[in-house]
Length: 287
Image (cartoon, rainbow, N blue to C red):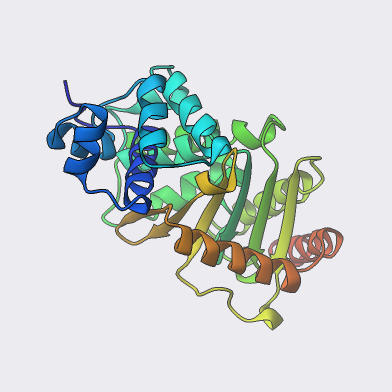
């Protein structure tokens, strides 16, 4: 039976199989005839709506003349790990799919990089800061929804706080001054950000005003490195939800943006000094 709501990993498997077919110059019907599938099954497979066995993956790869063994092995791993429960599944009937897919993207990453222009990135937010952000949503959310979203965000943070996933956060200087929830909430958030920046697997880099806006004021994004470069992914926050990117050209652009920020952002130590300076300024003004 076809899946109604394939997961992010299931859709990514299908997308890579589609790319494999297209690079071989096959249409869906051609591939289907060669591997014993009808055209509808090929379409559903590439949409992530039906699964395939590791054996069929190898048959498709051979038919499409794919010799990228690391890619085939990584796709086989996706197939082998299907059906395993994940913590975010308990929220499936309570939160929008966008929330779950961000958690799935982060949890499957080998390394994470984020860029945020006007707020501290979600993976480093305090509970009070996150709660204040959700409370400013318009139209207003009911209190139980605000609490649910905050709890979910705090659980997402385990992926980097555990030390299992190296994380680099590029934070624009403007975000250090935005008072979501008021000065006390911001002061505590800056204190927490300072502490997190000392974490062995967390790197906080401030992009100063002097660097301009990189890449643009609306492009807050997460770049998730996969087990191989071909399986990297990117997610961008928009006013209408998240957008996911896995096309090679899009991923190349995000990697170029990250390289640009790496060259313009302050060092880790200089970033900590700026965070501490803004925190002290807040304390002086509001004591």
